[in-house]
Amino acid sequence: MSLYALVPLLAQASALPATARKVVVEKAGERYEWKLVQAPLPQIADDQVLVRVLAISLNRSELSRLNSQSFDTAATTPVSDAAGEVVAVGRSVKNVRKGARVTNTFFRNWIEGPYREQYLDAVYGWSIDGVAAEYIALDARAVVPITNGFSYEEASTLPTAAVTAWNGVMGRVITRKGDVVLIQGTGGVATFALQFAVAAGAHPIVTSSSDEKLAHAAKLGARDGINYRTEPEWPKAVLRLTQGRGADLVIDVVGKSTLQQSVASLADAGTLAIIGGITGYDGSLSSWGLLKKSATARGIFVGSRADYLRMNEFMGRHRLRPLVDRVYPIEQYAEALQAMESGEFMGKIVLTF
Image 1 (cartoon, rainbow, N blue to C red):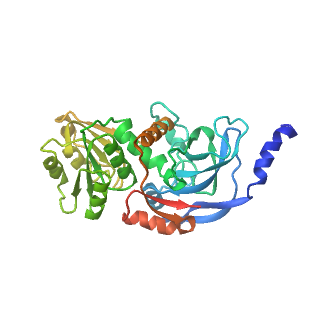
Image 2: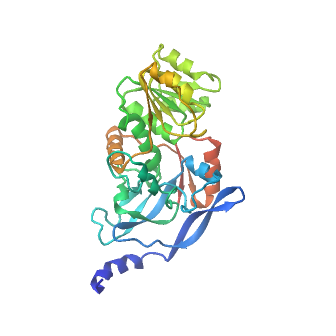
């Protein structure tokens, strides 16, 4: 490399600190714990960009990984969703400029086209290091511009929860005006699913253990709400609210403990979108429950960068904004995790650097 070629890179580096804050996960007895440390800035390859992270958002998976006995120690830095500013670019990067406001994608290598299991080899915060750091190196093709005037806090909620909900409601499954959409809960994926269903002109029904959350969901456009604590046989409530029709689409974010009830809630030719596993991923489905309704069960695993871009266009067209419940400074990550575990929130929990 010539001296002249080095000048731009040296100019970029001179304005950057030598070290910055970073979260790492360490074994602590039977659990894993987050720890905030000072670490050298990552070096970027020719096809990468360096992003100064301003906000990260949490997903339920952060809790399950801390409790897991098989935590992938190759990913010592957690979290899959970040938003920030590009502060340096590799020599071969053409489509991302310094100063751009961006987020990462959930899958580093799923750019477009159908899903392949091999994409699991490069998931931020899971199979590769995550984005809970003040500076992160990202492949240029794995970043998405922040659009629609979103703040960094709002944009940080999009890579996992929003893209998952998008594919559950509008991407892999096409929701049409008048369709009944049953949405479990009021967390990140569920709240985005509700917003997308409302924008599509559907009839959303939301389940929750909290009447207060159901009231908030109604303000966001939910047509009906079911408190599953007072109505534990909630499929009957779904049938009652739909005059015996059932739900054309069920967004199941709970997993093992709700799959049978989700199938029972389906309308003829309906679709069960299996999205989450809060209670585990090893549940069973009633084959007769699906067969007798000619229904479909489909797994939704976030989505590609192309899905993300289509979702951004939809959100802009319908003027949708992410629901951020609360924001913590990175030093309060323990409190943020406790808030996530409590379930006493709606939408997303965000941390800022």
